[in-house]
Length: 120
Image (cartoon, rainbow, N blue to C red):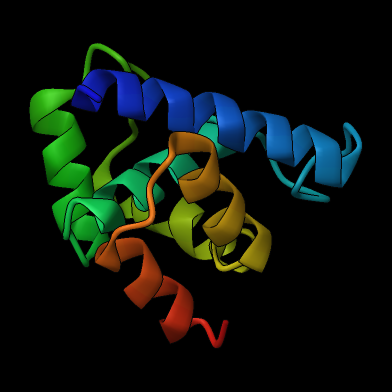
């Protein structure tokens, strides 16, 4: 699978899972909505981790350099990192780390290592 297809498929799956588990409710209870959707941020974090980028800074730089046309609302790095931190509980959800790889047909060591890190 090409990286572009992987990013799009991950985004669609993440977005569907958020809709399913939060039943249309917003993930945040107060404050203004960020320009970058929560599904986009979670997708960027998951794809970045899959590619071996283990810092928000590294993930941010990768997507800004290579995928800005797909994530045109990418904020500055500080706001991106803040949004990632606010979504960390969702990102760590066991469901995402099981559903995403299965839906992509992946079962390689990088996904397995991450699942074991989260106590699976």
